[in-house]
Image (cartoon, rainbow, N blue to C red):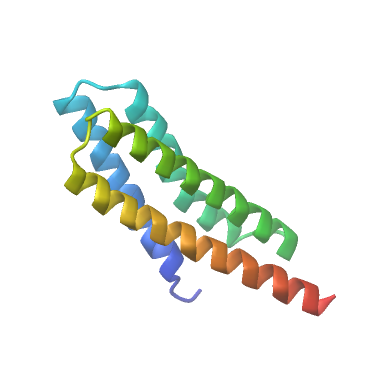
Length: 121
C-alpha cells in the first residue's frame, strides 16, 4: 500500500494529542477534558486507517466523514482547553493548526471521493 499523507499526519496528530493528555493530567490535574480530547483526537487517525479497508466506496466515504466529525470535535475541545486556560496560546495555535489542516484534507478528500463516485455511476 502506498504512502498516505493524510494517514501519516493523522497519526502524528494522535501522538501530539496523547502527549497533550499526559500534560493535562500530570501538570494540570485535568482528567475529564483530557479524556474527551484523547478520544476524539485519536479517533481521527483510527478512522482514516479503518477507511482504507472499507468494503466499498460508500463505506470509505462514510468512515472519512466520521473522521471529519471527530476532527471538528477535537477542534472544539482545543478551543475549550484554551479558553479555560488549560493550554497556553502557543500550544493552542500549534495544535489547532494541525487539526485545521486535517479538517481541510478530509473535506477535500471527501469531496473528491464523492465526485469520483458520482462520475462513475
